[in-house]
Image (tube, rainbow, N blue to C red; front, side, top):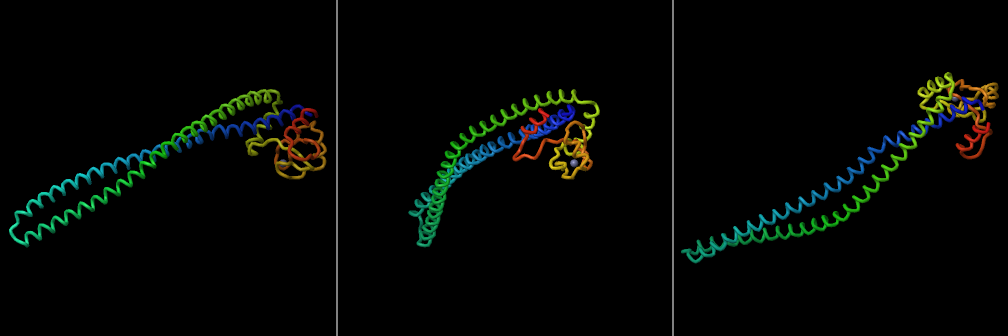
Length: 252
Ligand SMILES: [Zn+2]
C-alpha cells in the first residue's frame, strides 16, 4: 500500500476517535453538575420538611397560648356568674361562657390536626434522612466513576494526539494539505472506503477506470463526487471489520 494512503487512513481513524473522546470529555462537567443538582434537590426538600416541622411546632405553641387566654376568661366569667343580679344577665353570661368553651374545643381540634401533621412530617424527615444518606453515597460513586472515565479519556486522547503528530510528520506535504482541506469541508471525514465500486461516504459509483486504480491502493485518489480520499479495504466481507481493514492496510 502507498505509504501516504496507509498513513492518512490511520490519521482519519485517530481523528474520529479524538473527536469522540472530546465530545465525551466535554459532556462530563454537565453530567457531574446534574448529579450535584440532584443531590442539592434532595437536601433542599429535606430542609423544607424541617422548616414545616418547626412552623408546625410554633403554631401549636401559639394555639396553646390562645387556649390559656380563653380559659382565663372562662374562669373569670364563671366567677362573675355568682355576682349577676338578674336572670337575663345570668343567661347572657352563660351564653358567653358556652361560646368561649366552643372556641376552646375548636382550637383543641386544630391542635390535634397539627399534631397528626407533625407526626407525618417527622416520619417523612426520618425516611428522607436515610434516603439522603444512600443518595449521597450513590452520587459520590457516580461522580468518582465519571471522573475516572474522564481521566482515561484524557489519557487516551493525549496518546492519540501524540500519534497524530507522528503520522502528520510522516505524510507528504501535498497529502497533508489535501487531508486538512477535505476534513473540515466534509464533516470530519476526509477518507472513505470503496466497496463494490461505490464511494461509501457519498454512495456514488466510481468510473471503472478509477475503481481499477483505487483497488491497487498504490495511488492517492479522491472521489470525483465528494472529493474524499478513497481506498480499497479488500473484497466485501461479512460483519464489521475495523481490525480487519487495518490488518489489510498493514499487509497490503
Ligand atoms: Zn464520495
